Image (tube, rainbow, N blue to C red; front, side):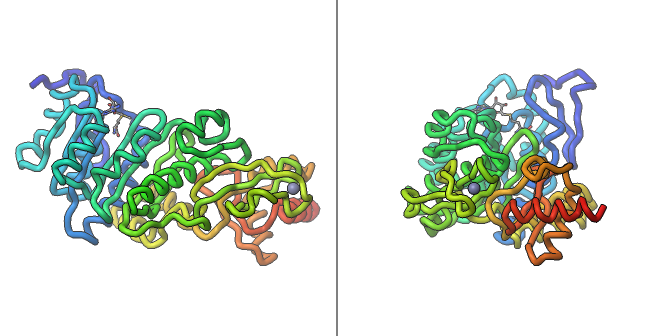
Length: 376
Ligand SMILES: C[S@@+](CC[C@H](N)C(=O)[O-])C[C@H]1O[C@@H](n2cnc3c(N)ncnc32)[C@H](O)[C@@H]1O
Ligand SMILES: [Zn+2]
């Protein structure tokens, strides 16, 4: 087994120490892996076991961390590129020595069906792919236990944020249009698509958490025995380019939909998931664990995610409020306070640091931003 020589190629992240060699590894995605570790821990607390399938392992950092930090009792480590075999053997040598780890080099789809064929189902299936995740949304379900988790990556933001409608139809069976809250839409298209795929198998999914990192989209989902998809939680988002307001649109109302504020036609995106992006109970428990481990930054992020629950499936950017109100961009904290003082739930979103989530319409936000300007 070749031990990678270059000192610069040696990393440590969490409790893991590993070489990267020629594998893909992005230290900036640590927070993504941290959240996965926390969710996996909560799962192990609840079910008393944790069997991981890391379908696209790269250098094996995730597997190693699930084993060391989430207490996984088994890690199946798969990497399509067989040239990473000796690197993986080196990085995972301790887990291998303890008979807790198996390394393969299959195409992920073949691996998922192989698991199904052998009735070898997993508590957590991690699919950290490049580009579009569309192809894996259905096949990963075959390897996942009922109540098990699936951690999915998508880096194809262009398609899901409305910059390639043809591609979005092909990937999600949905029409994605562009608007200021399109990054939230990208998460919702991804969840909606998995929800729909699960429903074809008589199953459902529940989002544990959803994350936009600024570049990539990540969702942690639980596979459940009951179909979850309904015409109420899977539908359309309408955006009025004329006034900047959003509304959700149900399948039944598709034929007679117009902006409720000015009767103008809406730009319609979907179908997509309109339910919650996160599960509050899981987030709270993940936050407690993050605090216990003194992961302050991660705990802070989870706080913001927690506050996003129970809001409509979109946000308003401060730039849009400023542009439409013909005023300087208001201070986010002041606008949130003003909305709350006027009886509107309002808060921040992790998806865009210059945006707010609220039940109020954009006209109210603009009016309050004007008042704030007069006070200052
Ligand atoms: C984004 S990297 C994984 C990074 C790693 N999970 C981490 O957190 O550092 C994606 C990996 O998946 C592998 N890969 C791509 N397509 C695959 C497929 N269809 N089946 C198995 N592996 C694949 C690539 O060789 C690459 O190493
Ligand atoms: Zn309108």
